[in-house]
Length: 509
Image 1 (cartoon, rainbow, N blue to C red):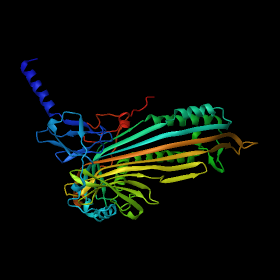
Image 2: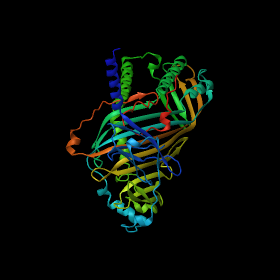
Image 3: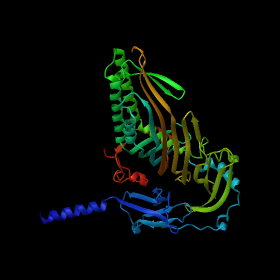
Image 4: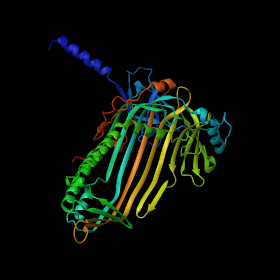
């Protein structure tokens, strides 16, 4: 190779390295306890930024080559604001010190209010403190659904079909997944006016769906196994009598189970059913944008700033007991720390952080104090046992408070514990109508946990014209990921995943 060509290639590679996108990856810890600091706001030049995850970890991509003037500003409730020049940031661990506050510091320009008076002023200033205008928000949304089979037993008490014995049923129960997870992540721009129900449009930039397709495949295999057994033992013109406890129902056998149909009407009916199922599945995939858009909206509008919120401590303060605990420091300003708990029938308790100057609630942490729903009848049970979360607000360019971070976690359990009997009958067979019988005791308990996280990186007020002129791209589908891929979001500022997502991997068949 000629010397000049060497020099040209060397110069080209050097230029590429210098132009490569820079990123910052670090963990925030408490200077005293050494514990991670979650939900801290990390901003670049006080413009755009990210939020640390529950483990205190964050990653930020820089869209341009950094200069001496670029700096990070790190803010978290109860800690001193820390500013670091990007060029001088060399450590992957960033230590924050707790802010000590003297009471006199807070009360220099403030009257000494009771907890009840502070709550009253927070309600009075609600309309002027928060942003209810048309806005465009660059956001990242993550939803994780976890299913856990706590109990799955079927005891065969009687069976006239040899293949459907206890050993076969146990083998089926054994291969059914005991735990499963589904994680959806979306980066996009949300156009909205929060107080108008239908004023909501979402522009998805990138989306992923992390789950195990093998779970779906295994259920298709089970269906085939059962069909083969029934073809062998069950007559075409039979019907099933299904009994569970004192209840019973009659079900005819679908003739398509045997690979044939009796009439053209049956054929058309079968085709229509298959087409309907295909259409339903197609609509579900096609409506990914709509489904997720309203998922984001439901998370946002569950906040205390909306009248219909379950967090009704401002609308109905007489139902709660408030206690002023402390004064803290956040984003260079002081906040009251006030706890709330139900006096009688309300469902939630929590902690409020309220700005001492304008009485804006900048953060709320809430958790249910009792089961939200309980149902138990004839061996069927259902309960909603978990509902907790966090809302964090920060000022935007118009000096109005807008949502910065939201987290919500909900959990429920569903159970069945009752006898189940399936009897095959056939009125065309001479003698006894009963052909086969399977008698069982069924006991299932399933636990479901859903966790939603929403981070707003940029909040921009727009006109109603800008909102109306934007048109959604309806046909958006997420990228399927069989396991966590750290390169998928490379170059995009998102919230760092937790350990459960990082460890996720489809089971190899």
